[in-house]
Image (cartoon, rainbow, N blue to C red):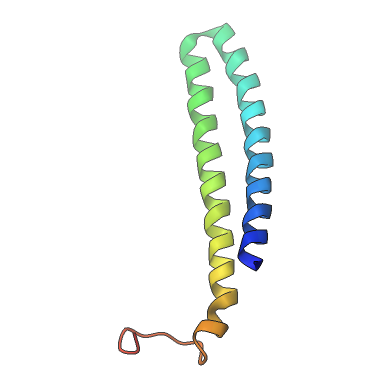
Length: 85
């Protein structure tokens, strides 16, 4: 249940961040296309990179926090080696 709620919150945050970046990128792309198509493409491509890295980074950060928080309940001593596995 905790993972579900964390996932729902992360999804909402990703949607908000994604829409803020996409809106800003669309404005810059539209303005850049008035200058030249290459300028508009450059803005769109960089905006897509920022959006992708931001959302993947957020997902990996939240996943790492969940793994570290559940670790004591799965591994009683908190350590893990290949020999124990």
